[in-house]
Length: 111
Image 1 (tube, rainbow, N blue to C red):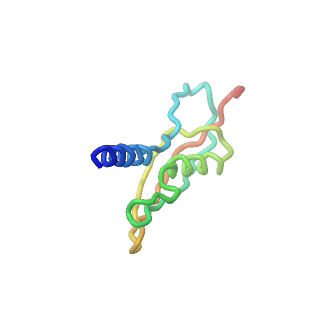
Image 2 (image 1 turned 90 degrees about the horizontal axis):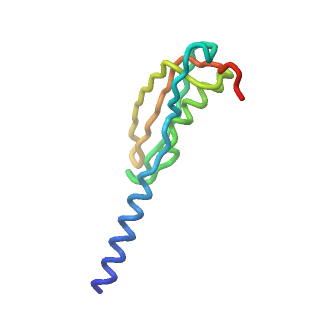
């Protein structure tokens, strides 16, 4: 019985660690000679936690918002980025809306 409880504890710990993964926003540094500014853009993305522990489109909402803002202007990247987050509660879920805004750029000589 002692062996079984250790195995269960290790498996639960592994599941908790596996749930703590996410994606990061793209961060690169560009010299002003490497790009042309296309203009300001912003976009939002929403993720939810069902019952406080089941993520639905939660981990990648920052990246989805950034990609949508860049795509809206037809650019390659974003500079002067700002991130805002709001949340809402709806009985069995909590929602998180992330807004990304900044200047969209088109890289020169993209290979």
